[in-house]
Length: 242
Image (cartoon, rainbow, N blue to C red; front, side, top):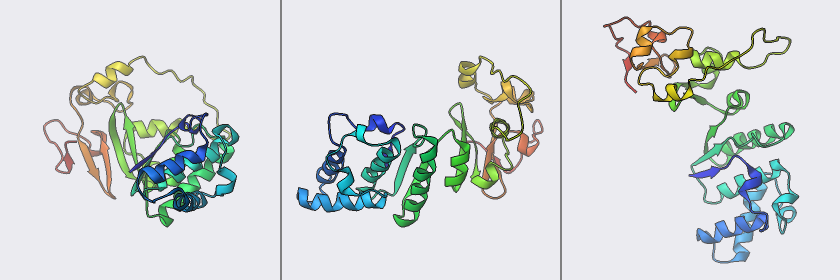
């Protein structure tokens, strides 16, 4: 397992050349015996992310764009041949014009290197584009999980609905001012449904009891009473505790 950090400008020290990180990774992991062999490995991983070793060698982080640095981060992550790469908001610090280049790189590496990505983001558009499955989190809990095309086109949890309604639409202007209540700490501490204080569908049971993780058709799950039309004292057979 390897990790790609959010800010590529803080991933590399300004006092060391960027290629030093790649060589040290190869040598410290014992993948090769000497620097000459290390250069071959470094050249291969850089080529896999669309960079040439001669264009990277001897340069410092301030000589690269954010997109290039993030590609170098991916190259370093590929050196030990991981089965899983965790990408923490990998495009949030990159210029908008370069974001899809990095996202498309992930898609290509998934197939060519047989590696899976855990892509953590607030950007629903790139999440929809890059993922096969999506898990929606709220206040430390996964509240909905399933195939990305279903999660974002037909939400089962009210919080996912709110997220989709918050996405700006061309030709449509928000008519009401959006004000979030100051209840974040209380929501984290709540033993019942954490989303109940701002949920349009909330009932008394939502404020009193922890909702079940409901298993829905097509491999979907939702931490909510709403999808099962909860009736007091008659828990549905297809609901289970998280």
